[in-house]
Length: 225
Image (tube, rainbow, N blue to C red; front, side, top):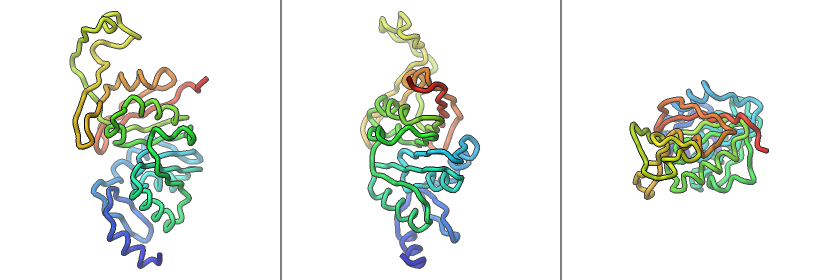
């Protein structure tokens, strides 16, 4: 496309992310991606790193990573429409980014990555525990994960396993909350559940509220055997 055709295409498309492009052009997204980028600037160093954005939408955070000197950037999403938008933007911006249509369960042949970003994705996936397991295989260094957390004040299970302190899980904190949304029934984990699923190879830090949910920083502290 010519610059004029590209500008007309950007203005005609429906966007979820707000993405700042060259020549002062910005996509009219319903979510201001620049708010998350402020968190990325504070907590992630991507220079020379291999980076993936899981649930990349139209690629806002992939473009940020590439501009900040990432060696390789991959963006994946299950929505073909968003991947087409991202590829079109990348072509016009001359950004060497691989955008692929695939889900979180299909990451096995891509990882691990030095930096993993995954924002407001796991909260929309019915198989939460399976998604967390796939995510930990992708994290070779550090990950930023935004999701809805259960925050139990008091919980006591009558399960005999919990009474015995099964696997050291707290009877008051290891909680999964069931929640219904437009996609069906979803599970929201407590922070302790996230730590249990990821295991002792990782440390998890709660960074507080993000654009939609809670932002967690996940650091790999031990390489897999």
